[in-house]
Each structure stands twice: as structure tokens, then as C-alpha cells.
Length: 153
Image 1 (cartoon, rainbow, N blue to C red):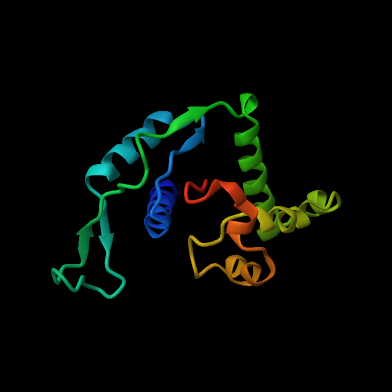
Image 2: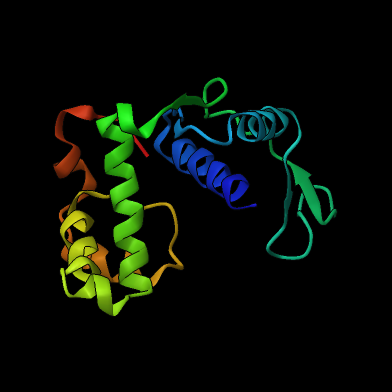
């Protein structure tokens, strides 16, 4: 369910940027993620936040993911600095949200604040981290510089 939600957020963000994405994932769930992405490219029922879609009156609408190109690509994290960086960002967020005394002694509960300034926070407006950090962080366009519309998410 979490990966499905992530794919939908990436797809929606790419749609709003008029761009496309390629997914590079850590190994371990290749068959499951590839199968899910393939299904969502064909059939992706999205519930209306207003109980029904205005154009059809139905509770769900098929909105296939079209902004994520191809199936996910997989790379072992021990062979990829990029995957290790993503793992670190996720771990830093986890330690921020659920600090442990044994890790806080090393300052890991504050590590997310360091990477926060380079993250794209446009995917959701309901996240308190995104809302508060958006005011403090430099705009994504300034951080991403020459990447232009083909941003990595």
C-alpha cells in the first residue's frame, strides 16, 4: 500500500510539473514492485475526496500512472551511492519522527534538518514537515539548478 501511494504521489507531482519520472529502487521486492507498477499503468482506481467524481458520479475513477516511465529499475544499495543517499534521507526522517536515545546521542535525530533544504517538498500539503520547512528552505528550483523540469523525486 505504501509503494502504491508513493507511485501515485510521484505520478501526480510529475503531472503538475509537466514532466516524467524513472524509478530506481533498492533490490529486495523486485517482483512485487514491478507487478504493482504494471497494474497501475493499466488500472489505478482512485477514490474521490468528495465521495464521488463530478464527471461520473462514481466513488472511484481509473487514473493510470502515465508519468512514470517503464517499470522500476533496481540496484543494490551497496553498489549505488544514490540508493545509499536515499536510504540515509529515509532513515534521517525516521529518526526525526521516532527518535531513539541511543541514536540521538550521535545527533541522528537532527540529521533530517540537514537534508531538508535539498528535498522536494511539493508532493503533499498535509505534511507538517513540508509545510514548516517550505517557509525555511530555499526553493526547489534554486537547489536543483540546471536540472530544470526533469527533476528527481
